[in-house]
Image (cartoon, rainbow, N blue to C red; front, side, top):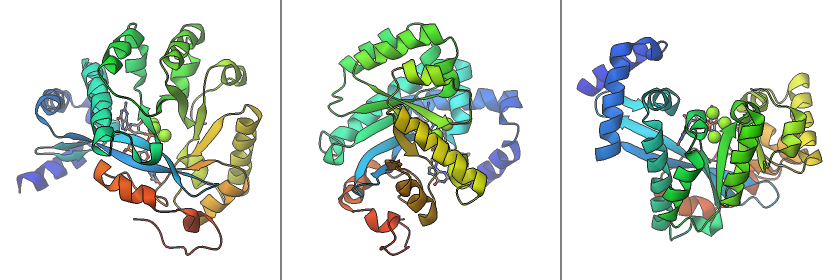
Length: 290
Ligand code: C2E
Ligand code: MG
Ligand code: MG
Ligand code: MG
């Protein structure tokens, strides 16, 4: 019953979570506890290469099972961490946990897939972020490719200073992706001159595939990526029609519920042994992966 009450309470506060000072304090305290004693874990969502149908990467996504409130979405507690200084310990925990999971899955994620890790803008913005990260990764294996995901706003504001940081991250061996591309503000010249490897097309655009404007916008973004020689990932692919359109127009990588939901590391190995081509080509059945 406590759990049910907790869920109900969270739902009530859903809209104005950030405005509820008491709940914010509670969540801060509980998040601190969770970092010490458990309740957080990473899930991994497959990214599929449209040319081979093989899993080529995974995105690490954090989950928090709160003792009384139930599952709290990352969109809500990342903000708590950002406002309270917990974002650094949380960010460190995420890196260590991903690395521990990599070892669990055989010292390397399956078939050498790359792992994408989201960075909070606040985390990235901290002045000694790069030197701190350098210290952390010294303690880790990281014998697989790690791509760090940043949003447009982070990359494009304070461009000179951030360009420097991005170069340092590249020098540490990370790949860099722009997450939720198209929802923020991007300058084409920045895109060209910044050391970005990958653009992730925001799922709102993928959702509009099938409408004339939607098709046009996605084609334009894919054209831009090809012109700038960027890898492109489509986020939020839910239907075979979307997958077919994207593959037809040269989108290299698909991510979304059609291909697989975020899953525990223990399920990754089996998922990576599957070939996904039937899901994303005309010849296959239209059954969705679970
Ligand atoms: P994001 O980085 O853009 O992650 C993609 C989100 O879309 C994930 O939500 C994922 O579960 C969801 N998604 C994937 N495929 C589909 C689909 O086909 N349909 C729909 N409707 N949704 C799909 P999630 O895990 O709730 O994460 C939300 C956001 O929270 C993330 O957006 C990211 O900004 C942030 N986040 C999640 N994990 C972390 C983390 O470890 N660190 C940081 N700093 N932020 C994180
Ligand atoms: Mg992301
Ligand atoms: Mg995204
Ligand atoms: Mg996001």
